[in-house]
Amino acid sequence: MVRASHVIFGTYGFWLPNDPRGSWSDFVGAWELARFGKATRVTTRASLAWRSHDMAARLAAKKVLKYPFVRLTGRQARAVGRGFGVAAEKGRIAILACSILPEHVHLVLARHRSKAEQVVNYLKGEATRQLLKEGIHPLADLAGSQEEPPQMWARGAWKVFLNSQRDIRRAIDYVRRNPIEEGMPHQRWGFVVEGNERVG
Image (cartoon, rainbow, N blue to C red; front, side):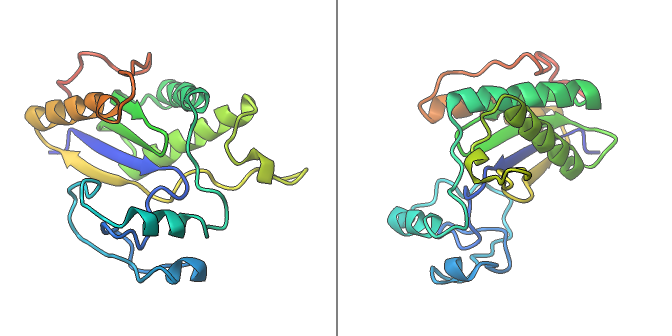
């Protein structure tokens, strides 16, 4: 039985469909990106971030995106966290671990009445609203006078269902370590349900 899920979602431009390390995409939708190769479809659910690759080619591809790729500042990341807190309270979402990194987010979510994809979309929405409210949306300069800025999140999310307490504990530990392994300080969020590894 699924008790929780480990989800990862990126900001706009974080992981392209033709990323040289592999992706979960079937096609490259933008012709500008297609110059850098076909979609690199893989079926594994394991993280691909560690694979060696041509970083210069990956960065060159990012430069031809329709909008600048999004990299959150510390201030923006804290606003995203406040948005997650609003979502957790309003949606009764039990977040067991959270790391908000400049280009992607890691979460461990206890099982919810809604599908994990719906929960992720709700979290993204509240985070976006918080950034707009605070006037620090990363793509705000691209909005017209009567328009909202372009979408700052990549579509979809990577997820792994967690069926045992051991799996949940391992995922929580991984998410907690993630900022430190990226050379950032440990993160502590008020909305995270601390010490609640036993769920379901």
